[in-house]
Each structure stands twice: as structure tokens, then as C-alpha cells.
Image (tube, rainbow, N blue to C red; front, side):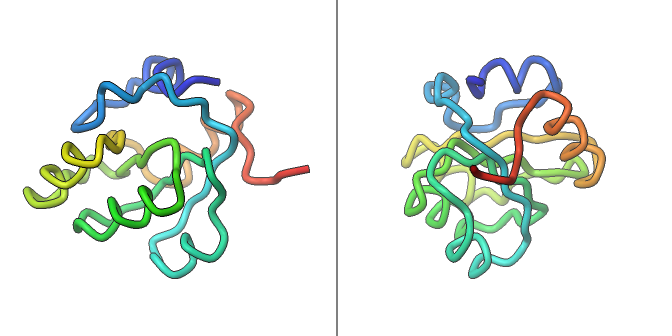
Length: 115
């Protein structure tokens, strides 16, 4: 499923990387520990986190993730937003808590399990 479709269906708001919403989302990953995401997220995953600092952009770029969703209506820090725009990393915001957002992603067919 394309990131743009997920964005529309879950009413996510784009903060950066709007030109990359055509990315295909192959799976999902939720974690607030950067080392965990580096070790376990896979290329094409949509990352769900509450972290707002600019290091999330570096991790998403390095792992070639489809994008990042900030939960609980958290807004990215100014330097995070600038870095996301520079790297063209899709950075989205949801008012939902992590658990609820992940449940809705699962209903859309986005899984954290790879076969």
C-alpha cells in the first residue's frame, strides 16, 4: 500500500517529505529506541514513534524506511523538520496514541511480521 493512501485513510498530517508519499509501505515497525529500529526495522517499513529529535531522520534515511509517524499529536523539533525536508523523509503526525494507530495500520493490512 502506498504511503499516500495510508495517510488519507488514517488522516495523518504531513510535516515533511510530501514529495515522497508514493513510497510503498512494506510493513511497520514501532519503537522509541533508535538502536532497536536500526537493528530490526526493514527497508520500506513505516516507523511509528513518539521521538521528535533529528536523529530519527538519520535512522529513517539509513534504513530506507517508507516514512515516520509521530504519535500523540507530537510535533517534530525545528531541526528535525528541517532535516526531514533536506532528506525528503516523509514525516507524518497522528493525534492517536501508539497502540491505537498500530491497530488501525494492522486493519489496513500493514504488518510487522515478514514472511
